[in-house]
Amino acid sequence: MRREFRLPDVGEGLTEAEIVRWHVQPGDEVKVNQIVVEIETAKSIVELPIPWDGVVSGLLADEGRTVEVGRPIIAVDTTEEPGEAGSAGQVKALADDLVPKPPAEGAVEPGAHGSPAPKEERQAVLVGYGVKTGATRRRPRKPAATTDGPPPEAAVTEAAVTGAPAAEAPATGAPAAEAPATGAPAAEAPAAPIPAAPVANPRRVEVAPVPVHEAPGPITVLAKPPVRKLAKDLGVDLTTVTGTGPQGSITRDDVHAAAAAAQAPQQAPEQAPAAPGQREERVPVKGVRKMMAQAMVASAYTAPHVTEFLQIDVTGTMEAVRRLRALPDFAEVKVSPLLLVAKAVLTAARRHPMINSSWDEQAQEIVVKHYVNLGIAAATPRGLVVPNIKDAHALSLPDLARSLAELTETARAGRTQPAEMAGGTITITNVGVFGVDTGTPIINPGEAAILAFGQVRDLPWVVDGELAVRKVTTLSLSFDHRIVDGELGSRFLRDVGDMLEDPLRIMAWS
Image (cartoon, rainbow, N blue to C red; front, side):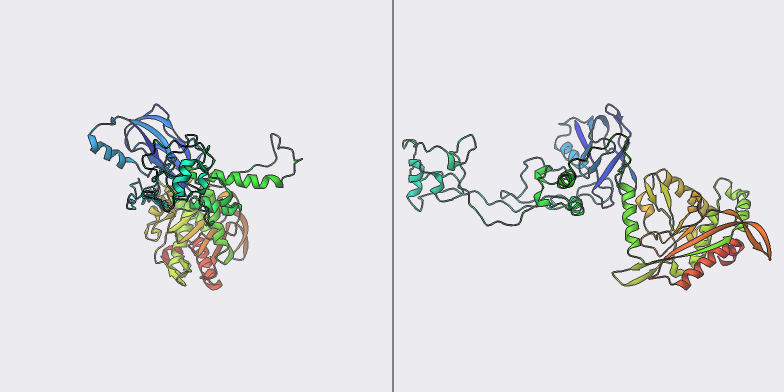
């Protein structure tokens, strides 16, 4: 039997995702829990398994397309026959659906004609809490009424029998059982006399409904929250948009079309279309890049940033890195100067706990963390991500080196999961790998500080009163001035610099 796999809620509170890459094609055989597709959410790349055995009969969403949660993305012909296992098989088929199906065109909502509305509950999904069924409710329609028994006035019977216009009959709301098959309103039907013989009871007549003009009320717009936010951002009035989605709901495409139509009159009519090889290109902001942009704007306009700079001699650090690489404990891991920078930050955070804290606006409290989830900013083709090493303060130096290598490799491959980016307490960004000396980094939301590590260069340096060529780098520390004042920020930065100038201090202060 044919089954459609619907895009599940991946447990991030998201409503849509982009199809990145299909691992299967129509005609391929699939097994339960086989990875069939990669999707990109606003946070990361997620692989989705298929919950059935069978043969792929169709891919319902192309690569690069953004799909809403609950929409079918792949169809599979399973080995189970429709009648197999009786009712138990039907129950299992229903349980296999990961998310509720979108209502069909013209579907009647439960409870609209007196039937009891189902209890609200969530459907099972691969991960997360699932999608709540019955989230959209409408006011039940009034049940239709018929005229039974003698009408209050004889004019009713007279109007029906003599062919008088139905508009003069009382609006009883009875169904137009005698209405023409063409669907034309009863008020416009030909006034042909109705023979009296077929009427068994001339005092009981079905009266065609007459439109009742009620006072205008608020216009109900069917649109999901992301669509409403998009309309707000684009300045589109949803009450003026005609929906093309299920039951007339408004989709993102409807909003974009309305926004384009609104902007069309503003364009100069003599403007020529862009020729091939245009000088500008528009890149859609979505996925990881969109989430990063929102986070950076929120941080820059919420936390008052202060940035301090410190240039230091790291000749001792570079020598320590060389010696660590020769040790058996580090034979299978990458040892770089970032390892000792991370260890210095962890040690300095223990000496100055307030640097490893966050601001709780609602409670008006500063939350000091006595653990360190060390974030490492990583540039990926899809944008900036900041995964963190959980409880990095408790790791040995070899374990910290392995964690850094795994974190960096996973981030560059685009496999960082949302849980790996949550809960960071302080961050390091290694801008030196791009050949720059320093920068003014923006604090990762929910943290109080971020340290930038610049490139290491050979520069003239005064050593014991004499000029020498040394390995020199520049550190910069951005901190939230609501939490960290100038003294604390300076002491923290100076401690990190001292440990990188003389790595022996890392052991002494740990």
